[in-house]
Length: 233
Ligand code: ATP
Image (cartoon, rainbow, N blue to C red):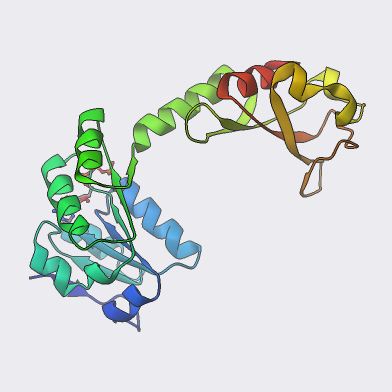
């Protein structure tokens, strides 16, 4: 039996499910941060966890938070989970619970199912089950920070295989002349896609854009090339 705690005036699970909301299963550090961020950006969230203290601590912060075991099909049905189109399994170290939960959820055919993996083997099993989005938070964050630590990047986002967006400052050679005259794409294999001047908002660049030394730019390209470009001073 799911121990349901209504945490909002509108504690109707069916309605929440229909509102294109997200069900987050497992409210550890990762699931909790995810659920709260979704709430902050205006998405309703059903949170589920077996731990009473965790459920209590999120009381009132999510649209609905429930103490329940997600490895039990009747519990998931009771909570209208099959009606959710977007579900995240944020159970990590209990690999068995993660796999059982994901397998049950897949039988509901959600439009989007994300599941957190704590190891490559765990991720492979989730992929073999048919989970569309397998995420490796620790591994991905570790890789991302490695790129930030290595270079002069202010931010870094790898998009799929071997393609990245890098936020950095322009090297001196790229300041003061229109981008169209610098041949950046042909020489360095990257594109300066956007620029932020001090005190201004981000804008797209054009061939006429002239960068200043205090500008911040967004560079797109193959990971190594984008990284190498950001290191040119
Ligand atoms: P994090 O790094 O996000 O803190 P973790 O990798 O240590 O998490 P776990 O501790 O396995 O992952 O799980 C995260 C949360 O999932 C915990 O709060 C745990 O209580 C919850 N959880 C584990 N099994 C179940 C289950 N069967 N049903 C619902 N919640 C569960």
